[in-house]
Image 1 (cartoon, rainbow, N blue to C red):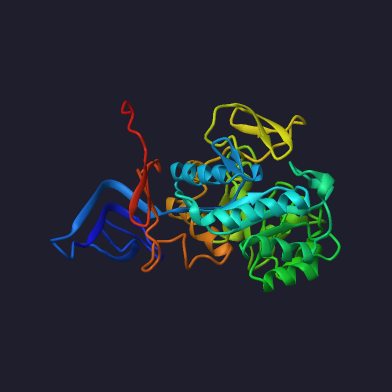
Image 2 (tube, one colour):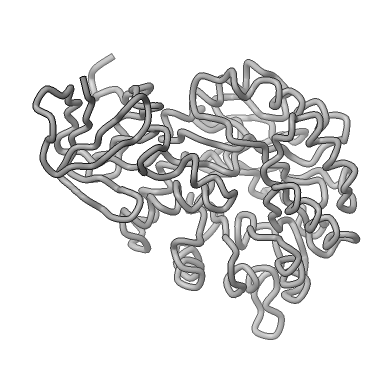
Length: 388
């Protein structure tokens, strides 16, 4: 018997449609119909709700008291399952700057275990570091900063079963251009981050193949009218994507709007940069080797600097709509299709299109998450108030 999802609105690959029926066939998306084509079908009724593609978080360090750098397969599985409550159906486990030995162990662990997770699907590894600049270190450990090394990337690819999908560096480091070209030829998206680069240095990196700016405005040289810096490059260069953390702490809503207007909302990637305290109460946690206090919705180092976030991606979607800087369909795109496109995985995830895995979320018109589906099966359902 054929299976259809009924809802008031559907955020499809090329349009917003509905009400109607979305066909699910053997765990994959099939056709969309305004009227039911088969009266014998099994209908899952989500009347009064909206259907959107599962969200894709391409920059996330942890969740539910687990950190990727814990190098723990059980923790990786817990993060995967916890992310379903955030509307995330695909993600890139993200490392921090650390010793080469620890990074070797972590990428090996992920490469050996990514197929075993039961929740959000792991689509690759994002190595955030260690090729950064001290001036914009953020919550990265400067003891391990170094110039980009092709040999290290080759080792990490071998140890992870060729699973590195994205790597970040500061473009002013020695050897950056040659490294970028090698990485891109190896199928790795190169991102620019934690950098004091000039506009011209960032431009040169993009000309060699870099294509993503990491958490734009944070951890980078700012925009000045005589020195546009990394921030200016993130807004002005063509054929690149710009990440942004829309938690209300990292970036002012007006600055987020400026970026979205400059880049266009199809080239802005909403990420969380979430650390282990995501989904947890306020208190004291770790981010890599650093103690972090979570208070008033923000995670900070002892110095007061922001240390990742506790943002959930579905909340970022709702935030930008509530701030009046994006329509619902734009917000959803920036948290699903744009992230997938930024790492060239939009043929696998991030949109509702025939033949792709039926990974999707169910939302209220207020953009509250009510359910998350993987392969056409409901894997998370939000508790109704007063119901256990």
